[in-house]
Amino acid sequence: MRTSRADEFLEFASARTGQLFRSACLLTSGDVHLAEDLTQETLGKMYALWGRTSRIGNPAAYAQTVLVRTFLSHQRRRSATERPLGELPDHTPDDGSDPLLRIALLDALAALPPKDRAVVVLRYWEDRSVEETADALHTSSAAVRTRTSRALGKLRQRLGGSVAEFAGR
Image (tube, rainbow, N blue to C red):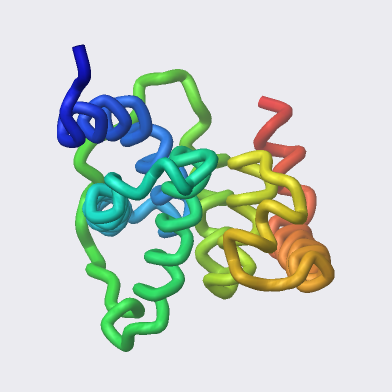
């Protein structure tokens, strides 16, 4: 029995939403509301071209690419720099992770320019190769290596020895 286009997409979306959301959270430096919006917009774009997925070799990787491009597009808008202040988080994680380390890493990621942040997330969170990252960002491999080096240098400078200090707990 053949499933419909909508059923196939629903299955794909159910399987990939969590990963897309986690990547979006890293791209947005922990802004869960923006991450939800980016994830939803990515899934909407994927649905619009779902009938043409036979030409897409790896829909999951393409969805990640769409997410990064959607994030970068959002960062170009003037309203992207508006951030609410003085709000409490919706909940605190009970997963045993160190909140100070998480805050330090998210703050350091937030200090990076959007394209540098995208390179770091794709290379080290998504574990993509230099070539895959370059393809996702429509840039050269050399530009990805340069951005990676600069971004890691900025992260080291910003975090200093604090990562080892937090991770040693």
